[in-house]
Length: 473
Ligand SMILES: [Zn+2]
Image 1 (tube, rainbow, N blue to C red):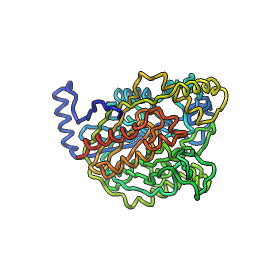
Image 2 (image 1 turned 90 degrees about the horizontal axis):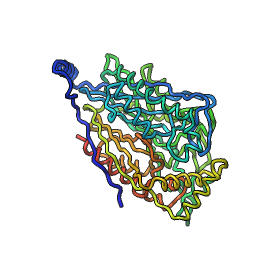
Image 3 (image 1 turned 45 degrees about the vertical axis):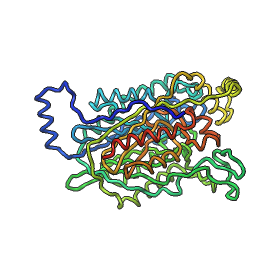
Image 4 (image 1 turned 180 degrees about the vertical axis):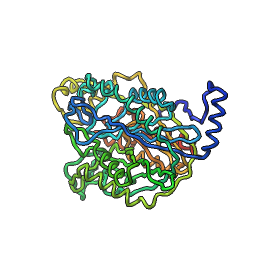
């Protein structure tokens, strides 16, 4: 019963056949002058929503009323020998297929970069705008209200502007990579109590004698830095990759990019005027910033500063990467939906009639939303995209379409043929939580709200490994 994969495609550098011979020879000449030049640049465009725009993150309606810090669409464009790849990260809670399709179309039309060379992920800030998902969540959060729809419709052109701005600044760079130590900053939010097989979610108190985390964390901060190759090399862009829910600002109504905003801003400030950093969130489906062992909570300002300090401590260990022209591959994977008993469906219907006006608890509401969506779409397969971009025999970036359990991310990194593999979750669309197989029988929030059947997460890891093996030299 493993989910099936469909044919994949690998994009090789190719010139459009319609190009005229004169233009072709000019391009060939230009390419030969720049042979071996690996170029990159970053840009950002403000995407802070207007007051009144519906907010994401929780199972009730909140509307934007003010701002703690701005939200951005940030992009890094890489290019060699005429092949471009664009990484886009949005300070929003998730991406949707509709948004990604529209944004790729806009990038292709306005920037001349193939849509399938674009990777679009979300930082998962819980104090950012919500996007319509065509399910019951739209009713709860008012995502499909006119301000919600208008916000989503504004994004593709803003993303294309960020990509165009970066493309216009492309200059030779040397990428370098290191791993910083984020130990002690993130926590597995699922806990098992002695004698029970059922997971406790976000425990209020923790007894070390009888309780233990249900799984690991990923303490690695992936740090990819692009240095200009000018006479005096300067960092111009970085990709920072860490797996943790941005929930430290809480459920307020002032927008904030949460800790990823603080983290990237500090790295930019400390490394010079040309620096733009993007934060790609890793496999953080079950990972939170709250210390359940001691009950201690850090603010987004504290978390961002700790991540920046850890990154800077590792900065001297950055090692230059040998590069090649970006290689981009994607594969569509068809996942199975969950199945439910009649009793479960009836209960979900009852909850749904009451939950729009009353808070019935996150887990109860999440489960009902998932069941009703699933029974309404039984004939519609869960078709998702897994994408990988490689530009060095030592480094690749993988896009996964949901909130992925950390165990799956650790397995993917470990088995990857690349020395360094960054993973961006909530990328190129999202189907919600994607637990590992072991977590399903343990139940609770992420499991009951997962739309995909047990085994789906492992199928995505398998698909990603297949792509990475194809892209590896
Ligand atoms: Zn989440």
